[in-house]
Image 1 (cartoon, rainbow, N blue to C red):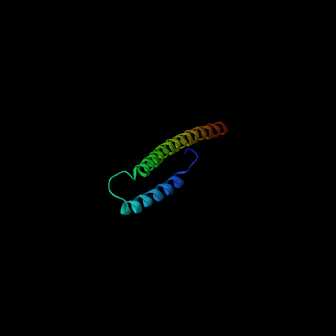
Image 2: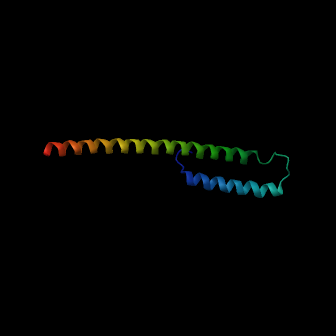
Image 3: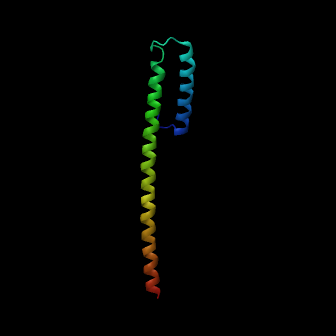
Length: 85
């Protein structure tokens, strides 16, 4: 599932939930018919949660690096201005 986007996975999860709801209205409530749908829903929700954590971590790193570079560039400009004056 590594190559899938969150949007694709959310779409698939919505489809499975709709199937589960439709089947739950027709099938017996003995719990034997929906185990595979529930298993796939759990896998998809886990993937979404892990992907959100991965993306949040990457965004934080990007912000940190951007802030660090900005401070370095600001110091370089100040040194150049002091040297020119």
